[in-house]
Length: 368
Image (cartoon, rainbow, N blue to C red; front, side, top):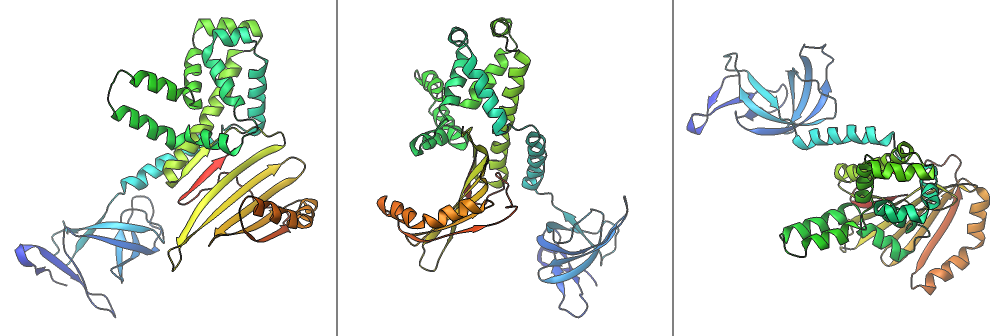
């Protein structure tokens, strides 16, 4: 192979590929490739790899560890060794990929200390036992108690309100207020907005727990500040875990502390499907519940061309039998609210796979 001179004096290199057409690369170009084969060179040694570039399989030595199947972006450089027939492909580090690696590490750290439903019930019970006189002296604690109690027995309207007051919706509202500038009403608008922000109230309480005033007041009730701070940290880690997950998966991911006596864990995921040939999109809602006594239940509701298709999987055979026996009643209930239930089926599945906070793509994920 010999370098050829391109217009403007830029040197190009033609790679002769055995049994195939030549591949022309010009220094300064950026190319995409797929790692088809990766060798196992030791630390500090180069390894032999095969990368598919522009549909051609190129064999090279890599000083960077690569994994088979990885998609890479490479910059074409001139050889520094002075060999005209050699070129160098430099791996371009993807800033987004590096950010995702950092976020994954942070998520893993936060995941270990997240709040369970049992922790949530315990925290709520402690707040309920606090005397009103103490809550009057500590407005932040009173605000948290009010916010927590608002999640009991959530209706559709209350769930919508909770969603709009958290996560990315809250961020959007804050940005909107700040972009308006520092008008006379800005402080009041911010305070009004933050009153409904559970994370903001928890952070404020965490700061106040370092002060003597709140320590003295808590001591009178027998509640240890360290225990309260530990539970506040757990709840903050849980909220921040889902905030990071939103950034990582580019979805709307929320954590809402719903109080349901028999609920051990649960999630609601909504995904929008691709448009069909007529431009109509389907929508899939999956609800996963882990219930004391009943076990794990997964319900998928598919909305397609104006009709609903419901599929239920459960570990408990008695639960499945009940659904089958009452299927006609369920259809009638759907009709009453103006929905067309095209099909419903229920099946028993032992050891139902269940992970309440599994990733979503282009969707909404609410975790309890």
